[in-house]
Image (cartoon, rainbow, N blue to C red):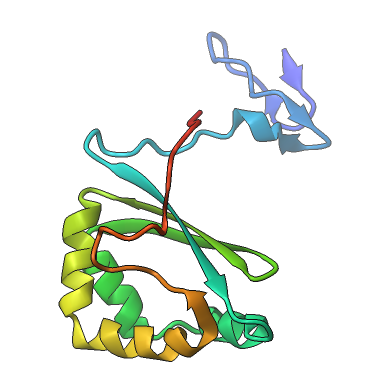
Length: 140
């Protein structure tokens, strides 16, 4: 049998994955699995009026040392979404409370947060006791 995009198939070979216009179907994408002990954290913070552009500029060029520090404390994914002034942070790590405690002690992270503070009305609470955490209600 011959597949139009892959050439002749070998005897006993698995058929090629289905495609649409030469591309694999998006729902066939394999997503990496998290370590068993990984946690997913959602946070809600808020920008001051007019701070959106400046905040986005900073996050297009996050200081490399800040990124390194975030990774060093065990955060493997950190994504921020914005809807108007509202910021929604999604974080994956092995131990969030430990990670934010370590970041709170980091002079470099303190400098970064000092740059962010004038732009936010509701900032990230590094105490681990704040109301910025969101409840996870669905996970596919």
